[in-house]
Image 1 (tube, rainbow, N blue to C red):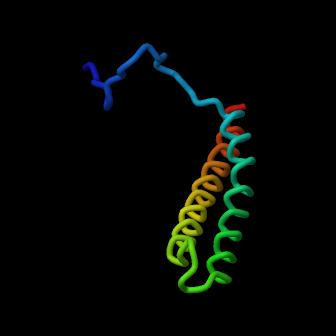
Image 2 (tube, rainbow, N blue to C red):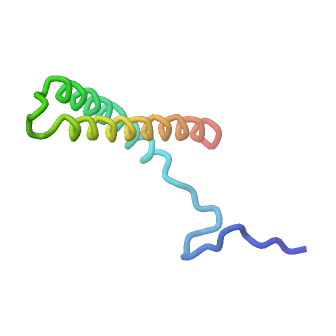
Length: 89
C-alpha cells in the first residue's frame, strides 16, 4: 500500500531538507536581547510621554507590544533550536 504525502513538495528541495540551525541560533541569540531592549525602551517612553505627545502613547504601547511578541518568538525559536541541536548534532 502506497502512502501519499501530506503536503506536496513544490520545488527542487530534497526530501530530507533541514534548516540551518547555526544561522537560526545566531539570529535568535542576536535578536532576543535586541527585541527585549526595544520592548523596555518603548514601554518606558510610553510611560513618560504626555497624553497629547507625538508619537501618541497608544502608538508607543503598540510598538512595545509588537517588540514583546517578537521577543517571545525569538526566545521560543532559541529554545527549539537548542533542543534540536542537542538531538541532531
